[in-house]
Every structure is written in C-alpha cells, then in structure tokens.
Length: 183
Image 1 (spheres, one colour):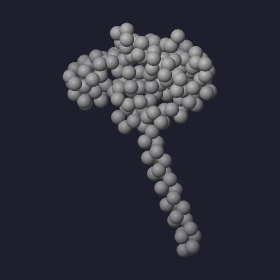
Image 2 (cartoon, helix red, strand yellow):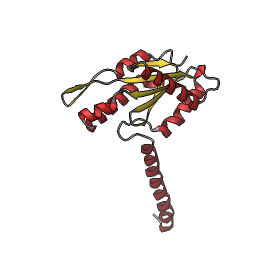
Image 3 (cartoon, rainbow, N blue to C red):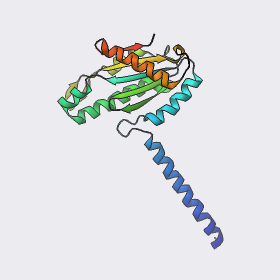
C-alpha cells in the first residue's frame, strides 16, 4: 500500500474505533449496572415514543414494599438480589409489548402499548412471589400504580408518571401488596 493512502486511512480507522467505543459507553450509561434495565434517561426516550404511537399505552410505577427491612435483616447482597429479580420479572412481563426501567433505589417504571392486553394481576402476582436467596425464602412485595394514557387530557409522560405515582401511593395507603389503575 502506498504511504499516502495509508496516511489517509489510519486517521479514519482511528475515528471509527473511537466512535464505536463512545457508542458502547453511551449505551452502557443508559443501563442500570445492577439490573440491566434502562435508566431514567434511556427509558424516557423510549417511553415517549411508545405513548406517541400507541393511544392505549399505560405507564406503571412499581415500588418494592418493605425493601429497607429486607436490606437491614438479610444484608445488601440480598437486597441487590431482590432488585435484580424484580427487574427480571418486570422485564419478562413487559416482553415485546413495552419497556421497563429502574428509576433508582427500589423504584421501577414501565410503559406498555396496551394495558387492556397486559395482565396487571399477573404482574402483581409475579412481583409477590418469594425469592430464594442463600437458602432462605425472602418475601417480596410491591405496590404498582398504573395510568392509561387515554385517561389523561394530554398524553404527556410527565402527567402519566404523576398519575401512576398517585395510584401507587393509593395502594401503599391501603396496606400495600397490590396494584391500582387511575380512575
């Protein structure tokens, strides 16, 4: 190969490698390192896209119940295992019909294309199944709030999150371990 051609190709190759590294770093920054779910930033862009395209979409907020007690009693490794298991169960429930994310701590979020075809009771049941960790059965529980986009005056993600949050706290207020849809 001639020297001037090699001199032209090498910088391009360097930029291509650099671009690939930056793309991988950006993708990993939008994923929660513990659960593998999207972080708030990664989830928000996808959620906004789904609610624009699917008028029957719904936004869900999931908060683990008694998580501090689980951590304090069984240790942080057990708490991490509970977070990973919750993420896996939420991801499996969303399947190809939505997307899940982790807001932080023990709070999760999801958006599904159509709440009528998604079985909210199945999600609640899955989130309440015990987790075996280090030979011990850990009781898991979660409060779930859901907001169908169609029930909002304007289909914005911020309004849907606020309504799902209110629905979730209504569940917590009546003794936890369940789900509620805004009405």
